[in-house]
Length: 455
Image 1 (cartoon, rainbow, N blue to C red):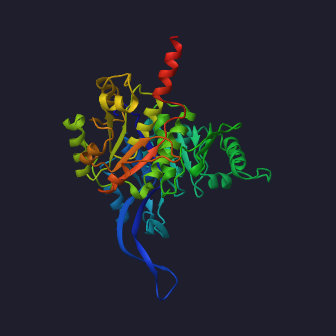
Image 2 (image 1 turned 120 degrees about the vertical axis):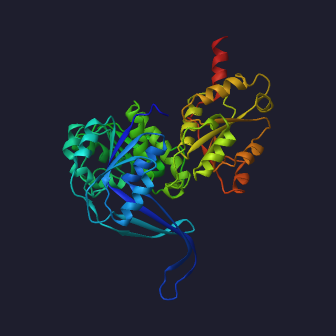
């Protein structure tokens, strides 16, 4: 992952806090739930969350944001220090804090405090921006982007993630990523847009013109995103609909899109990747389920080829171990997309692959086409794969019991799909999730087409 393009994030940092407990009664003095046995967890928020997510992807990240010397600012600095370089802007007031109170993992109330705003740009911030190869702006309307608008205008960023209190993106921005409600608020309405996708398409086209942006992607939550270059929008559907905690999904979308564009992807490819990443993010529990931010990034180690040692080391650092399974015979684009999405869910990805005998029992004579050594070698060559483990049984339960991953990923159809390993994961508090392959991609289909071609 060392070949990933470094990313500079400019925007307004927040400190997010979750107080999670249970509620089974109302208060005697008011009709409000009593949330008891609250566990507290803090994490980066706002632009700091976008930068933190990009850093967890294995990217070198520099964050330019207003951060002062108040208690919340000190906590945020400690959370970010292991992961990225912070270039602070002078802050007027205290760092903004958002506190969510959740009962049974559902938000009950949100408490906001701290109205700090970035006061002015610094020479250090300007120098970092002028030399940046890729820039993401996460503008929460607290002054950071405004203080550096002249530099940003001279070198338009790859992605601008706007919010209602922020200003417009600078002309020439390659991709702007408002949420649906935000897009409607930003765009002039003529009364003929209707609702739903039509309204989103109307707003996106208007914003491309008004903002003089190369493209606008309106994020639609569980429906995916609508990408517009000014006309004939492209709908990028989400691979699945999840009803989990969507907190932070917009930051996950923007960080992924910026990273992909920085690495040379086309805008359409970046939006497709961002939709997939945001969907997987929500499926895994959103920002509230992120690994502890104060855990140190995994350092290079000689255990890279030993999946059990790797998993043990990541767990010891309070990180998230992700495992994915399959035969991976004739590796295709669907496999790669699934493994890339799986890697974004945690701090390492161990691929559990069927042995030749296991594949033969499952798929029949003639399979696998590629022997185990070749399949393992190809999987290890993928940047998103940290280690490969082999199992000889028909199912990977024994191997999973040894690895004890936090997240178990399988590829398949969400509709009516079953994961026999799900109950096993629950024994140690893990979670099994399904992510779909790209539609129409399969090893069986590839072999069928190849066989037709030689007749």
